[in-house]
Length: 275
Image 1 (cartoon, rainbow, N blue to C red):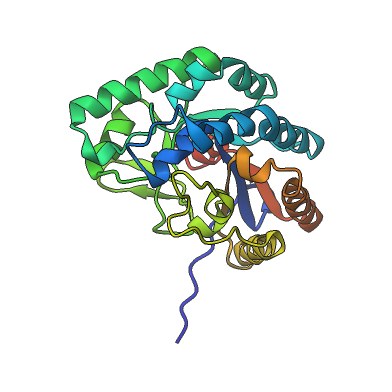
Image 2 (cartoon, one colour):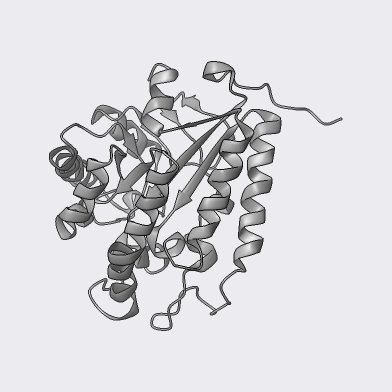
């Protein structure tokens, strides 16, 4: 017998929620695949800069046009490298969250090292945004329960890092609200490609855009049917390409057409659940 999950109660009679989140990793995206890679050379640096210079403005324009506020998770190092880009995000009223400091694998660090890295990142983001960040998303890699407990003690209201549910929940071990993510709703693994170093390893071809969009639309329909959280992850160097930005336009069109989806930020969801 199939057991359906109990639907979450969302505000304003909405049947599900959609959170548009952006991982503004720039060249640090290379660390997802090669944690020790030099981000200051080759295709990785070129793609990172291209995403900031060309992809981000396209993404921001679409969000403006659809009047959608997104949640941008940003490493501290990106704040230092691209302050004007971060300022353009803040000026539009988007939420700013923490995505580590140098896109480090937090589970490989001591608690003291993690505290130092996340404190520096938090302070850089606070200065850039004019307010302390509420949200944390782990750099792609590994974290531990110690990391989540540390995130809570550093003043973050929620995490959006784990893939173990379809609805927000409070993690009992640390009392931190989790807004779950799912890899099929992340554009970068579908489209990232470099020759040196090879990304993805094995050099499989990039996915067809129509297929990825269809995946997202199915996931949206699933969220509406079961009352869950549709948590989309974007990277400007993927979605910001001239042939891919239409995917976001079509997705937002379908969301707005439905009229029963709460389009919101991580901070607003956390506030709704009392975090």
